[in-house]
Amino acid sequence: MDRTDETTHFGFRDVSLDDKQTLVNDVFHSVAQRYDLMNDLMSAGLHRVWKNIMINALNPPRGDSPFALLDVAGGTGDIAFRAAEAAGSGFRGTVCDINSDMLAVGRERAAARHLDDRVSFVEGNAEALAFADRAFDGYTIAFGIRNVPRIESALSEAFRVLRPGGRFLCLEFSTVDVPGLDRLYDLFSFNVIPPLGRAVTGDAESYRYLVESIRKFPRPSGFAEMIGAAGFSRVNWQSLSGGIVALHSGWRL
Ligand SMILES: C[S@@+](CC[C@H](N)C(=O)[O-])C[C@H]1O[C@@H](n2cnc3c(N)ncnc32)[C@H](O)[C@@H]1O
Image 1 (cartoon, rainbow, N blue to C red):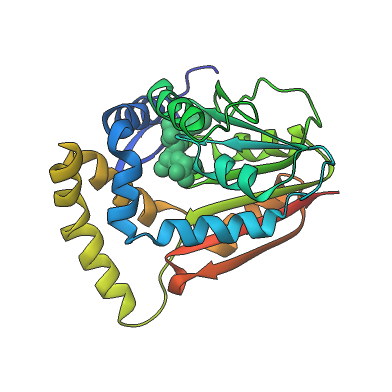
Image 2 (cartoon, rainbow, N blue to C red):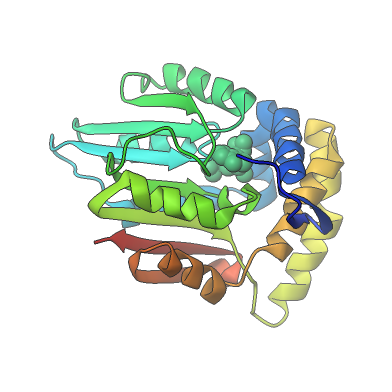
């Protein structure tokens, strides 16, 4: 990818697209070992419910028909493991992530769950995937796309690697619009999450970035337009937990 003078957000700061990726990589190198524990603490376990809703929407075949899933920004493997456990023997999952530390934790978890024959881990950038055109039946990305500097590139890569009839699903933090809940959510996000991050991972700044980056992500209607612009059809989204999270979907037809 060529260097560019274009800027984007790293949390509330304006940074170049390349600097954003370097800063994001530092965040996930720093938190990799305690990433899964922090997810449970920050969301009071709710991330498990949101992820299961995504797997239900993916609806991988329960039998032996082949189904190839690409889980991008898949980190420590949560989505791919859930899909493998819901699917039949024809399922193969590929977790692609730019961060070797997150992937290393994922590989250990796959071995511990005896899923290492069905789920593999590949280092790569969502903006330039090293996979053939039309290679996958499903593409998932959970809590990952807002970390990617060039979101449009990641979406067109998603479209390219899906076969016609393939499903695109993206779980991402969204915009809380419920009066009362929005203020509570802000208080919790800015006053509880960074100190919690410091206590658990020794790193408050990374969690400050995660909270700020949520506020900078497009509203669901704007993000749905971007998914449509990448070529997807029947683009839709479902708001979860008062808008804390949205599940976006589309089909390559
Ligand atoms: C919040 S974690 C999500 C992990 C996992 N999907 C989950 O839901 O638990 C975000 C992940 O995005 C990855 N990431 C950031 N930029 C990326 C890029 N350009 N390409 C691929 N992965 C990226 C990070 O390394 C990190 O593992």
